[in-house]
Each structure stands twice: as C-alpha cells, then as structure tokens.
Image 1 (spheres, rainbow, N blue to C red):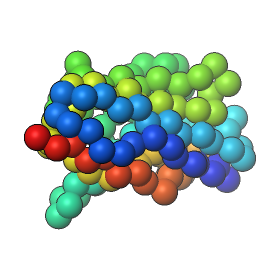
Image 2 (image 1 turned 45 degrees about the vertical axis):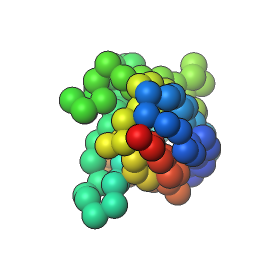
Image 3 (image 1 turned 90 degrees about the horizontal axis):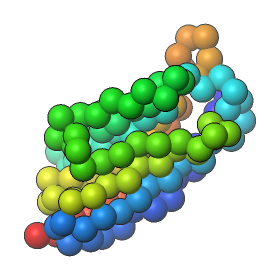
Length: 117
C-alpha cells in the first residue's frame, strides 16, 4: 500500500502563486503515475496534472502554462507549482498515485486552495 500526506495550499489573490506538496510512504517503488486532481464545490473531481514513471507531464487545458507538476529523484514526493491563479482554480486539491500491477489508486487527504478576485 501507499500512504500520501499533502501540504501547502491556502488562500491567495488572483494572479498569485501557491505550491502543493505530497509525500508518499509505503510501497513507493510500485508507484507508476503521480497526479493532482481537484474538486470545486458542486462539481466532479477533475484531473489537473499527471506525471508518468518516465517523467512525462500531462495537464488539463485549463491549467496548461500556469501549473507545473514535478517530483523528486527518490520518486516519493510530488509537487504542484501553481502560478497566475484564478478564482476558477478554487477547489480542494488531491494528490493521487497509481501503484502496483493493477494501477491501484491512492489518494491524499485533500487541501483547500482558495483564490479571491
């Protein structure tokens, strides 16, 4: 199993920046994909960014060019750098990994990001 602990987030004005971190423990060697998702009030959870085991990032169109996903060399931490934040980015952000031969999903506890206009 993999455990995920998130940090970062908070409140910022539009145009500002925030950085989210997620630390994995347990069977981290089995992680195939790192990702960040978000869920705004009254909406479904949506993909924000992912990074494959090979290091290839993928972004939602809504954050392309503003957000950057990265991970450390030990592949047990993943980060989300968020720049030029907009009120539409307000949501609870969740760290996610897919691990093991069956791609089992593991989730962080979520952290609230609030962007005011």
